[in-house]
Image 1 (spheres, rainbow, N blue to C red):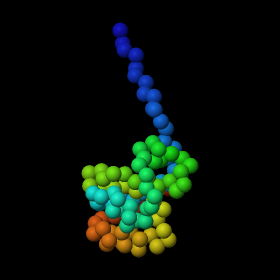
Image 2 (image 1 turned 90 degrees about the vertical axis):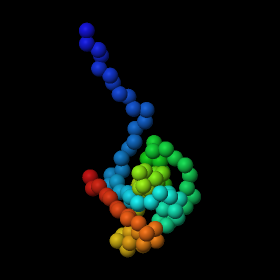
Image 3 (image 1 turned 180 degrees about the horizontal axis):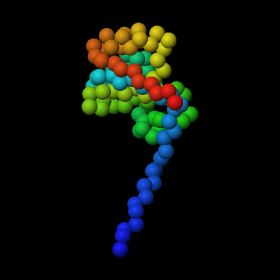
Image 4 (image 1 turned 30 degrees about the horizontal axis):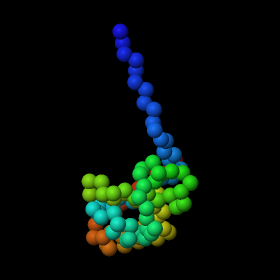
Length: 102
């Protein structure tokens, strides 16, 4: 007799933004990263609540993950390259910007 296939039912669904973007900052202190990129009024959140649609602004920052802090949905300003260079210089580390166009 064959076993019934297991069905996975998610406990929550994350809605993906249209053009997701994020910073990856090689650093072990998320609070320092937040300070340098200008994030204020931080509050703890899980991935599910941090990525919930309707948040304004919908920026979510992770704890350090294997030496990298991710700042999800960080809006890169018009001077994008200069902004990345400034953050990199101030933190003395590598900063990468990623964006997907769907």
